[in-house]
Image 1 (cartoon, rainbow, N blue to C red):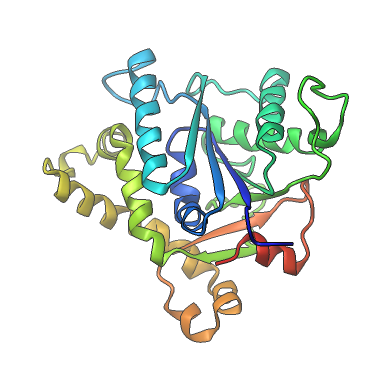
Image 2 (tube, rainbow, N blue to C red):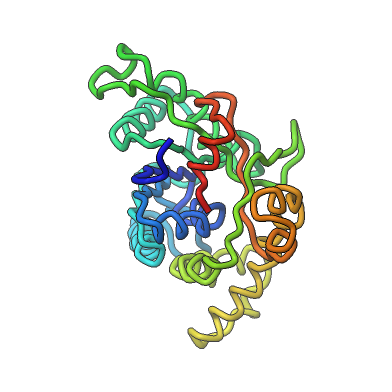
Length: 272
């Protein structure tokens, strides 16, 4: 397939999930002129220790929009409550409409196994929606897709009931700063809620520049782990010299529920 004018949709449960899992790859797509839509299925209104409800939801929506601008992509935040996402029929229909309306070549989404129920629900609803995307009489108010998109799972560290198995690993060293910039836009999370939840709030610097430096150092081990785990794929994609040098990577597992790409199509879908 042609590598021009790709349409990529990244679906997560919360307004920082697409960024942390695929922000580097998203930045590479945007830099190459492809169209990307990032989607959060919840409004994030529970993710804080001091504020919540509508004020937090509005704050997190603005943070997501800022992150989208940092990456050069669109960012949609739906209005489901954080911590209450359920992969029911109503949500399935909503996701089917979203995917059909955008018409992606590739959908990136979580696997349906994770510590957080919202993450599991996001993975499950995409899985449940996948086949129905091409069925005319399912959610018939939105034209069905004539061609199933490729669906790929975002990397995770969980091993039960089965571990993540990468089919693609992408070198994001050249997009690392854009990814960190996007993550830094989610101030309520990366500088407030998540450090509080880990018992590390007193470690967060007050100065904005020092905060970003602190965040980069904190995130680097997470962003480098896929490169360490899937070094063989990086070497196969980029050659021995470059593949061995990659520090940060993002990894993706092709879902059995979407279109199964050939090796050539997979390269065209991840043209980096």
